[in-house]
Amino acid sequence: MPSDVDTIAALHAAARATYYAGRIPVAEYAGAEVLDSVRQGWIRAIARDDGGVLCAEDEGVVTGVAAFRIIDGGMTLTQFHVEPARWNRGTGGALHSAVVAAWQRSGVRAAHLEVYEHNPRAQRFYSRRGWQQDHGTVRAPGSAHLRMRLEVPPPGE
Image 1 (spheres, rainbow, N blue to C red):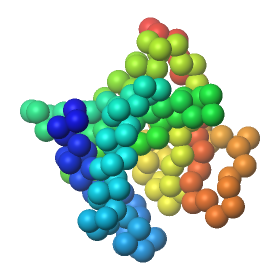
Image 2 (image 1 turned 180 degrees about the vertical axis):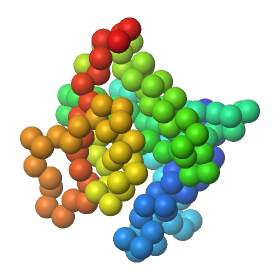
Image 3 (image 1 turned 90 degrees about the horizontal axis):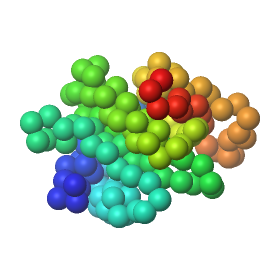
């Protein structure tokens, strides 16, 4: 997977551009510096000991990527991106199922994520998979993200 980091970073950037466009300045989500920062973030995620990175592939080409790790004592889905041309084709659902299966094998019982408030497509995706908005969490001032929680079912459910 480290050899796929450039593909993963480009996929990440393409997915983010679909929901950030027109909402935040382009310089904050696109360009060579941002892409290099995203790439470095994925290198760190792949090397972490307290989580994991899973990729969806089609004929050897990375089409989706997810990263998760322990933050403040709880499992957090930190990144989840599918190549926009692959949306609504099952890639995201299969990748999400693989993430949940990894959590089940590790004994994780609950997980959190943050989703951009202006990304209703992602919010619907997560809601269909059991994620619920975590109303018990106070959003940081100026945050444009909603926090969601998933009760991870025991293996076999």
